[in-house]
Image 1 (cartoon, rainbow, N blue to C red):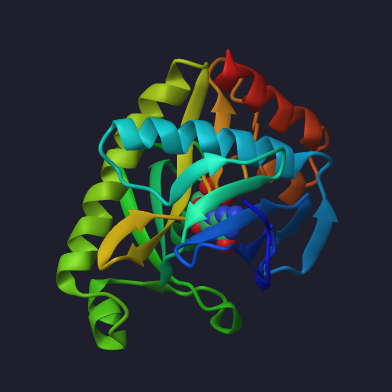
Image 2: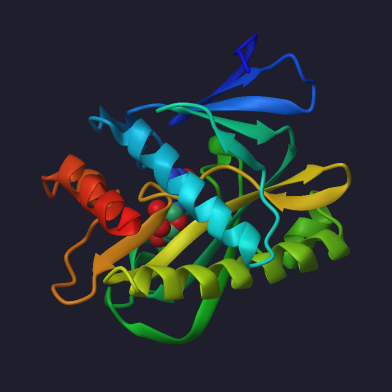
Length: 234
Ligand code: 5GP
């Protein structure tokens, strides 16, 4: 499968058309951005690592009953995916307080939540991805009630599957962000699942092994991504 016309370039990925109108190639870049793209950099081999990690996780999630856009990994940086119409909602699930939730509610990072917290953000860069609720989603007409129910159900299924999976690799799944798309009128998981989109802490040392190392200039960013890959592939 060859890359034809580039149809999109985001902060971390590019999308290309292929000879099959239903399939796209998702290319993972080493570019990293944070804080509304005001902080920019590269993480050596991030694209290669996130491609492999996303493959592993999409395969796992498919087995757990969550449909995804993943078709197959083509090479180091490219993944063949189903063409979807992205629903402009970022779904965040949190098991432990960190990042945005610590800031929003003035809470200490590291508090273990009694039940997972689900958040929706409107995927709109110029508005800085504001926090929204299901009433906003209906008002904006960006997803139907039925689609939102499916999105919510799949998001919690992803949380259960990944909490268990990462725990078996000595990692705590603190929180993560998902994006969904419509493919032949059905909701499926799209985008990527990687240390760019998940917070992962070492189970014993609580060391951060995700994009927070880049966001907060903690050093050893590449090493952290490599370490997650090493453990996941074991
Ligand atoms: P927070 O809202 O605390 O900043 O992020 C919650 C979780 O979602 C974190 O795991 C974070 O990496 C992920 N996340 C939220 N928004 C974005 C985004 O725009 N890009 C990426 N890559 N991850 C995000």
